Amino acid sequence: MQTLNVGAGRTDEEYKANEEQRRADLLAESRSDADYFFWAAGLSVLATGLLPVRLNILVNVGTVDLLTLYGRPLGSFYPLVVYSTAAMWVLVMLGLGFAARNGQRWAFLAGIAIYAADMVALILTVSLWAFGVHAFFLFKWFQGQKALQESKNK
Image (cartoon, rainbow, N blue to C red; front, side, top):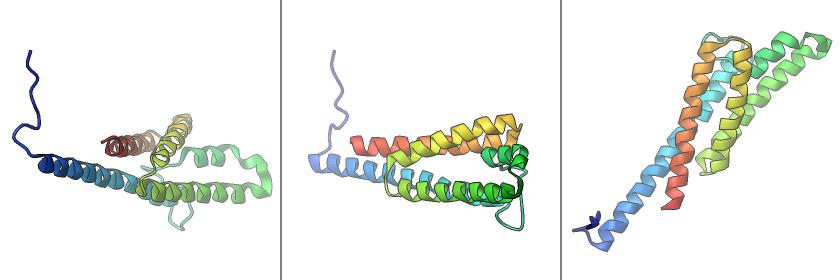
């Protein structure tokens, strides 16, 4: 059986240039997928009440929603805890976004783990639309880490 030579007809320089272009395309795709951390942070600001306008129809943060539902026994610390948790969520998403844009694969994996855990909280609060938004972000971050991994393996 004969094996086909995929690079047949190309010089070594053309092959290397093609591989460099592919690596650059994978890195650009990874950076593009990392931008979804910033979208997640912005939507979290809208959904958690950190701004005067609260829009939580399509987006929610399950952890903050659970804290809102069951955090009343905290008494006078209740608003401080809710807003601190929301602010911490936004800062973590921003930090992961910057790390992911700098080519850190762990940032994608940490974002996937955090959002997967938050999806459990969304199931408990029956936020199906927000669950779908979370699933979309998980998919994009999975693609980003995969592209980053492929670019480093080449």
